[in-house]
Length: 334
Ligand code: KG4
Ligand code: ZN
Image 1 (cartoon, helix red, strand yellow):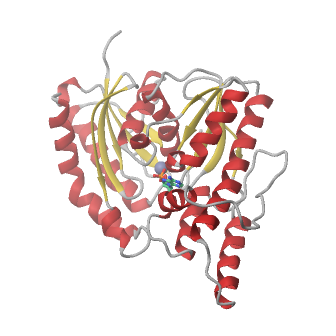
Image 2: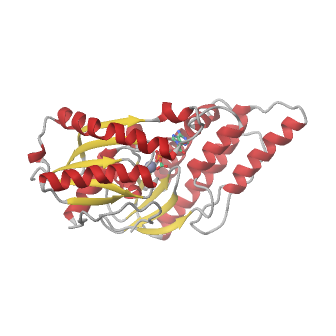
Image 3: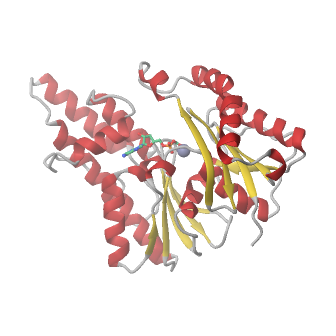
């Protein structure tokens, strides 16, 4: 098989990342520059600060990635870039860099939807088989997506309010355990017990999700206990919250696989790093004889490797963008 190399750029939020991926499945070189330490003191990502940091770092990260890959631009077949969704200023920087490379070296420009990237992180573990259902859980998304074949996305359910990662981050904030919240709640959950009374979110037959009620229940509980002068057992609250989230995500994902008669599941997005979710989904998939792929930790949170993997399949499908490509901060997956 011919070796084809995609140089990919991801800058939709607070990671400046560049990667070179071979045939949509092999990570040749990846550089991820995280801005977590910069945003930590603000308790969340500050969009303007993120854009400035991308500007300062993008050329350095491109050069470092090329050097690491031991390839030259002549050997690159196409440039893939995240065009949306994400922070408009952050997206713009990656897009501008990708367009410049595409123009300068006369390479096709491949537009990649950020969520397509998260899904294709799975192809770096194992070649994805179709049809499949993808559970996408990140800071901005909670989606169930049906894929009949490569690069065909059909959204069959999504969140009606908060995304699951967002709910994790808000729960972490009210419990005052630090930033970024998701991994810290996950860590605490492992040390606690399911001892609080919290509602199961949108426990119905639909493939939609809702996390704002559960999040508000946690916030109210913390405030009420503090007004009464009672201490919260943070480990137990984290454990109870995580159990409710994992239960509904797993239940609806398995139900979707059954309804759509598919035998393949993939897990995607930053919350795919969650230990409770990885464990329970693996258990239920196994029980139901469904094949499950879960990305390794380094490909769960934002990175350009996943954009390079998705970009390859978009490239093979003939998807191209002109140099007029604009960032789309709220674009839904197609
Ligand atoms: O995919 P991602 O890096 O960025 C978006 O595209 O949104 O996801 C970031 C989200 C954050 O909300 C973060 O708290 C959450 O993923 N996250 C986790 C874990 N690791 C990251 N949530 C729960 N458990 C984790 N272990
Ligand atoms: Zn993401």
